[in-house]
Length: 367
Image 1 (cartoon, rainbow, N blue to C red):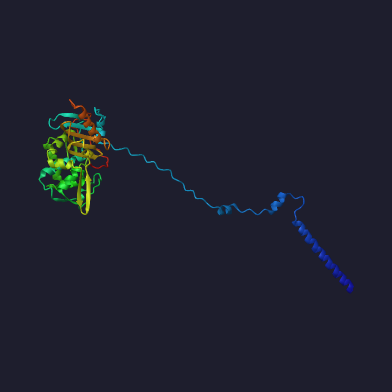
Image 2 (image 1 turned 180 degrees about the vertical axis):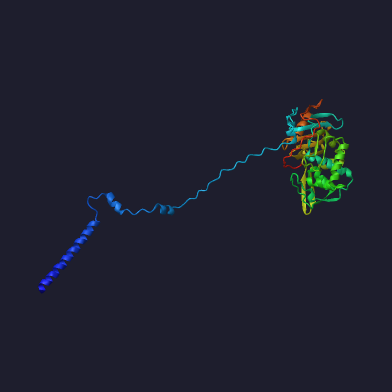
């Protein structure tokens, strides 16, 4: 019984060992690729699991593209026209092809008209106004040494023009007159009128009374600087003003001064003439004044000696920054090359008819 039992145990153990060996070999065979299996099938089993596309995108570096806005194109505002341009004064033909809408040349001694182009047209005269301002101050008898002060009232609120004479600046009346005539200083001119007996309103009334006395029937003033387009006159009237102002030595001296320096506190301010012809040795100028606002165009009046004659020259509504100078040179060459025997006359404007003011805002400075 013992032998039989042992034999049974031994046989059971052998059977168990054989079973385990068979299972192990079967499992190993299952892991080996079959001989007839295709390579793609094998590689498919070994291929790693693909990552999700979302995760791949997150791992990749991102580039931020900024949208570039197309440049905005703003339509250029057309240049504003002067009163003379609006009235068609530049359409008039003249033998010298002048760029000024108005031109007038007069013999100072004989009153012979040598050139006339729209001489009766009434236009804004800009800082030519200051010639009348200077004439009244010179004739007022007020002390040129009296110190005047620039105030807030002298600041230009119509055109917004700038000035180096700040409120509180103190200069003598003579210094302010010099700057007004030579450099067309607006605050100085306004201060001169404001310090006239009776104030600014009395000064403007005196300007108009003087114009009437001189026979300037086309002329009207509303302030002493010329910044207002309501200061208007004709070339014929302005020739009368130049002729009268030339008789005053002080006005001749100050208006033709090339430069001037004034002390303002601890500063020394240097001013220069607004008329480059004053610096030209080819010109013999006895009195001059320039002017500019958009409504008036470039303006110039002068007394000068040319071709042995004392002449008065008026140029108004000139188109272009240097055109008034160019026109003066054209007239000078014409007079020197062939002294005129008769007066060329052209006109497209109604005689002495004031032009309707433009109501649109215009930025400009008197000069």
